[in-house]
Every structure is written in C-alpha cells, then in structure tokens.
Length: 513
Image 1 (cartoon, rainbow, N blue to C red):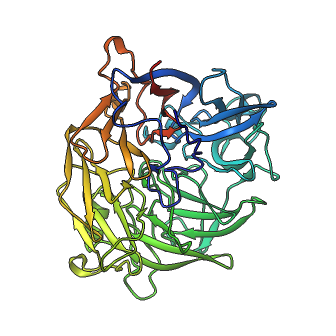
Image 2 (image 1 turned 45 degrees about the horizontal axis):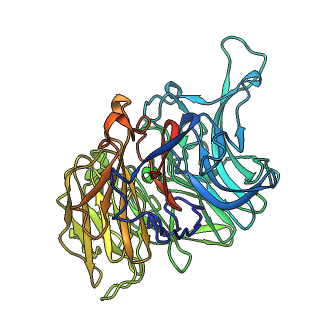
Image 3 (image 1 turned 90 degrees about the vertical axis):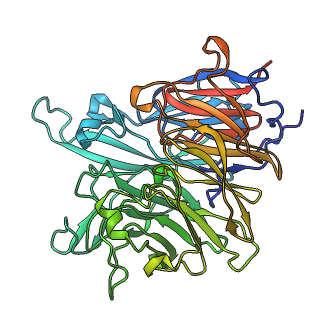
C-alpha cells in the first residue's frame, strides 16, 4: 500500500482554498464502502471542534516520530494527537484558560447569540509553518479586570494571537500578543473620528492565512449584534507585530468577514481576496470606501492594505436589507482556465447564487451584474462555507439541496450533476484524489446541529456525484456514528484517514482491518 504522507498545514489544503488533497493514494472510490471503510476510533476533547484539524507527518515529539493531528476547541485548548491513535492520549495539550485568575471562555449569552454554544474560544482554523515548526492561532477569552472581585465584576473580552511550537506546545516568538486595532472613520460606533476594534463584538471565524511570512486574520461578528465591522489584520509571522489593518466599513457599519469559516484566499500573484457580508456599501460612489456584500481584492504594500478591485452585486442594497450575506463563503481561486478569462474565482453566499468572476477585472458594481463572468441561480437555499475544485469541476451545495457538480468548459460552468438526494444544512466538504484520478467528495452533513444530533460523513464519486459511495449511517449498530454535529466543519483527509471534528470529539475514519 502506497502512502503519500502529505501534510495539511492550512484550511482547505492550500491558499487558493480549493479544498483538495490531490495526494491521497489510499482511499479510492473502490474501497470507500460500508464493507471496507468506517469509523476506527475517536479522540475525546474538551469542547466543540469548529476549526478544521491540521496534520503534520513524521514529526518528532518526545524523541519519537509521529504523524500528528492538531485540534483546537471552543474551550480554548489545542491538542496534538498521534493521528494513527498510537497512543490515543494527547502527545501534548495546551489550555489558554486560568479560572483562578478569572480567565475563562466567553459564554454564548455574553455575545447575545447561540450561533456558537455554549462557549466561545478558538473558532478559526489555525495555520502551520511546517518549516519553522510553528502553529499560529487566535483565542478569545473573558477576563476579570480585578481577579479578586467576587460580585458585580467588570470583564474584558480579549483576542490573542498565539504562536506555538508544534513539537511541544510552548509559546514562541514572544507570544501571545493581544489583538487590537483602530482606523480613522465616521462609522456608527466611531469616537472622535476613530473606529476601534471591539473584543466583545468581533468574532475571528475565518481561517488564518500565512503568506510570505505574514499572517492574515479576518474578523466578523457574533450573529448580527451591533456594533461591529469587518476587519482584516496582518501580522509579521516572525515577530507577531501588527503590520497593517483594513476595515471594511470605516464610514459605515457591519460588513463582516466571516465566510462560513473559510479563510482569505490568494492568487499566484500574491493578491488576497475576501468576501464581505451585509452592511454599508458606497464604493461605487466617488470617495466611497465601504465594501459590504463585496468580493474585495487586496494587496499589502508598505504597511497598508490597498484595494485593487472589487465586485458587488447590483442588488447589494436588497441583500443587505434581507440578511442575504454575499460573504457566507470564501473566494475559491481557480487554476488557470482555457477560454477568454484564464484567471477566475468562484464564490457563493446567502443570495443563493454561484458567482464566477474574472480576477483580472472583478467588475465592480454594474447594472444587471454585467461585470460577472457567470451568475448561476437555481440553488434550493443559502450557500455557506464555499465550494471546491478538482479536475475541471466545481462543487457547491446549498442548505437542504443537492450537492452540485459543475463541469467547466473553457472556463464556463455547464449545467450541474446532482447528488441522489438533498445532503445537508450548513455543511462543508473536501476532496481527496490521486492527482487527476480516484476523486472522492467528502461531505460533513451538519443537518442535525440544531437538535445536537450526530454529524453524518458522506462520500461521493467526484467524477459523478450522482453516485454516493458511503455514509456513516449505513452500517448496523451505529458502528460509524459520528459525534454531535458542528456547522461548517470541514473533514480533513490525510494518508488514508478522514478526520471529522464534532462536539467534544474528533472522529477518525479509514479502511477497516
């Protein structure tokens, strides 16, 4: 049996956010079936796993080599496990809490929404610098201003950027550092012409991006609880010092960067793309610098973010009024395509449209969306958490809808192939393949999240998603049942195993012995 030993160092495998592991040589459409494939074991953890687990092969810990799975939880813990379950106990664990000093996770009621419940800690997928041996992540905590206080106490809500040694869990680079920012602006929460980052109101859901020794952190909100803005911050990955700050709506309101947990995306030229949500939009007017419900193309220059281009739907105001976030998923940067537009990206959100845009000219805001290469409608609901690309195909799925496979021809999406049935709500997917063969779409069905029911792991033939290969409810006696569903969780496929984050555990699937 050939094993590739490919690592998973960032969410969705690469900075284009393709969602593709193209070096999977063990799992194939032939052997992924209920008779040969199933749940092997679980790793118990201390909270919900919203972040995608990451994977480093052949890492030496305590003088022994291990394939290591890194798991972050909403209880503000990070775990390093032997990914093959040998041993099943953590190789190391780090907690960022200190209850004796009044440092805890943030209770959901404090942010006035149950979107993440019962506590908020680490939500965003970390990123790993494998060469430097560092895992970067952010953690949110609630902290007593006076640790000796026992009643009517005052609290701070703090986001910190951590850099941990992947072999030991020890803090590196002088970390952690407190995340703070302010920009000039006349926004609805500005004070004396300054808009300031709110530790309580802001949520760091998008995965971290590491690009050219710079970390990018995106921020949105908890629900739609004002006041908040979309923020993108850049930090030096060697010093953890802040490099630049971009506010989506400095002269307005809202404009979250949340993307269903998807991270900022990057093209071959190093341009960064974010997709924003509801709020103020005035970029189409002279001097306007508010970019809600937009795809924004940015470049970091001399300590400042420069907006190079953007796209906004012509009905942006309607989307804003009806909570139809364009930015419910990230931008998927496609590899070069034949045809008139070689440089494309695809994105989709709560407007129930798939947008294919020209990265060389995003189109800004035009009547009838004339700047878009394609606007594809016909989905059965909102789209969350983004799509995937493999071998000339796009894969997207809307709430309570079919998984749809769109073949591309000369850069144009053709009518879709549908899965046999509706497959999930607020769910995410990833693709494994051995380069251009043996493609499998792995789907984490979170339909039962509202009832705290189990997640369902599904697998489809990536060459034709009308063929379902496996789902974790098929086997008798609940053999393959996953833990409680968590929305937007992306399965991690690495070296013959599938790792699925859940409530209080990570479930590990593979070929049965």
